[in-house]
Amino acid sequence: MLAVHRSRKLICDFALLRPGSAEEAAALQARAPATSLFLAGGIDVINRLKFGTPVDSVIHLAGVPGLRDIVETADGLVIGAAVTHDQLQASALVRARLPALADTWSAVGNIRIRLKGTLGGNLMAREPAYDFALAAMAAGAQLRFVEGDGQVRRIAAADLTDGAGRPVPQSGLLTAIELPQGVRLEFDRALRPILSLALGIARDGAGRVAIGCSYAAPLAVPLMRGESPAEIARATVAGLPEPVSDHHASGAYRKRMIELLLRRRLKSAVAA
Image (cartoon, rainbow, N blue to C red; front, side):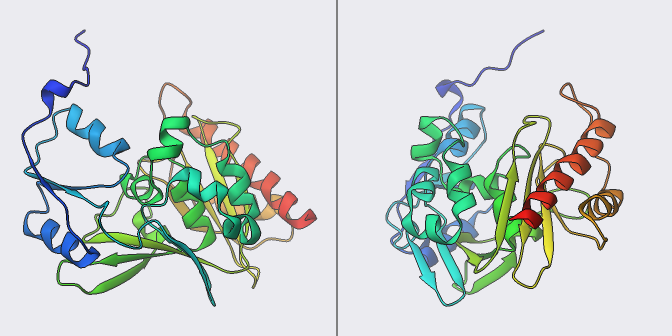
């Protein structure tokens, strides 16, 4: 069999654009959405180019202000889309408000990914094994986009994926992730690359589980009702679409493990 190799030789010629604002960046991309890419950390974009993805322009976001900020508001934390994984885990605000998120992120990725990879890029790649989508979805985060006409649009992070676990196309530039106050997060990455899982419990007791490595894109669903962690986990998993089967594991095994890990995280959340 012929192997497919990434190579700089496959990178096509393109125009490098350097906008000075989010509105300008979104407007540039809107002119040719099928053949232009945003570039921040570059981890995914450079890989796509090395595989020969045809593009006419790359929109470099280094000059766009605010994309690397982490700020606290009355409603929670607002994290810029170009914040890196390393910035996230080192942030005093994140450690104070979402300690489980900061603790988990100390073990995410290798040093290159941690220092260069951005949270926005991780989210918008919609790769099933990527982790930040799970955190944002489980926490009930809102995503802030700037459209090509300058309008601001917000969607729930969970709406990046449809009910069958397929990515939903998005327009505009993701500028920030808005994480609400008072959410308790639990993570379980022990079975990667078969399965990864994040559980979020809001102040009002409502919960959501986000599942990675099991569908075409990270998937999040609300917790179902039950009298015990076992009942909640069983009822929630019963409503899930069938996970993928691949060389790592069957869909049936993944589904059993989703229930097991969810039950464990629910017990941990109750005991805390």
